[in-house]
Amino acid sequence: MGHTITVSEQVYAALQRQAVHSRKPLDALAESWLKQHLDLERYPELEWRQEPGGWRVGIRGTAIDVYTVIGYSQAGYSPQEIADEMSPILSVGQVCTCLSYYAEYPDEIDQILAESETEPSKARLYRALGPVGYWRLTGSSDQPRAIREARARYDKGVESPSESLKTLRRDEDTDQWFQRSSVLQ
Image (cartoon, rainbow, N blue to C red; front, side):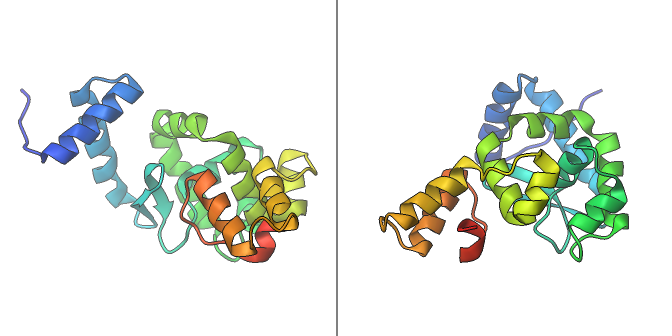
């Protein structure tokens, strides 16, 4: 027997939009999200947080989300290699927690990974890993397009470094702060 809960109009409208986007029935989507949110209590190292692309599960005390760790794992990195790449931010235990969480919710995480914008993701990886780490992960020594475009705007004198950062941030639909050198590498 089903039960009824009351949510605000704003939450209901957001659920409706997501149900249409994900092509899931509204009640199934709401139940899945509630279950996933409640189950997160079993993972004290993880937390839900609002990001520009929507709600994401991140590693508490870091700017890294589960989806980044899973992306590395799907690229063939072992838990130790992922921790080494993100050292000193992540421990092997935190990486394993992300992998355990993914084992419970592969469909949701795979959907988010599939919907990720390719170019902004490449730019974020490039900034996070630097040229050598990016090459090891992707096999490409070329800078991502968003990085090249920001550099070109700066080189032409069209924008100052801070304006290039603002443009890059806006293009990527992310509110992270970046160091000047990470954009101009």
